[in-house]
Length: 460
Image (tube, rainbow, N blue to C red):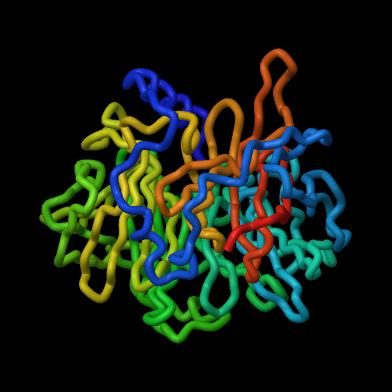
């Protein structure tokens, strides 16, 4: 998740560019994002109506929708292992037996976290790490049947992604080493989490997948290749990676068998922010072996990739598989921070069959600060058509929907004031995901950590 300094910078830049307008301004075709998916049969509406203030002061939704609070930080875990940890972040939903749903939820805890993830024997990597994941099992009516620690002793667990074999890959967005901030082990790794039985996966870092400021992953379901984004918002900016596993057939524990980590090189393009024309296409994308995936002495993004260099991008975050391609998101680029140009969001598509990279959508610089919000962050495909986008900035915080026609509507608004009556503040949203049957939207409020299940008259 971006820190406050990043949100403030973006707001200042929006003000300087005199952003106006009542709707999202972007170049590109949203239909491109949904080709080959169920969402391609999406709707062309502009929302579900105005948001209705919640009398309980938790979550404002359109009329006809309702929420259930599944879990709140500080409550007792159903397992009795301790308290529900702070800083609810990335999340995914998995199908269980008899209509059950398994949720795996990240906790982006640094050493200063108010409530750390409880350390559990055989599930703890570094006892000095405060982050990790918790797992919830829900029945068909979204009632919580169990809630327990899934992995502990990790750090700054931001996003990640699901695997085709039904596990969650949780990513550490840090690269601090043993001996810093009290850590006893190096951090900056990916860990596999089994949502049904976390002890099957334990707390084993997937070291061959690299040690850097991980954000998100997406798995090619046919080739087994894992794509990874690096969230670096200051120079040197991050890279876009792929991991070629030694066991591409997948399965629990298969990624421990190692593989090759490579970084993407776009010939002639040292920084993706320099590309501003939607539809710009680059053929012959190259993948270069990472010299030292463990970054023992030098961060990967600073390592020597040869005379041709490597391609960087500021603030690489979301990553997901759609159709036959992988999509990844650059949340923003600021020339004042070293980027080649300014933008308020890019969505890129890489087709591994043709080795072609295409810039699908560019947000801004005429993007309205209200729609789709300041610092759009987590994104997921919605079964009803379009996208759901979590807002992470200043002021009121929303989950926005974006239809395939580019219409933007407010789906939810946080109502938990963590400031004062005179200077209200609201926690960002994160981890938006849908149940396997598409009937429930699950989403987290980062602060105070709250997990919601939202149901209603979803269109299909």
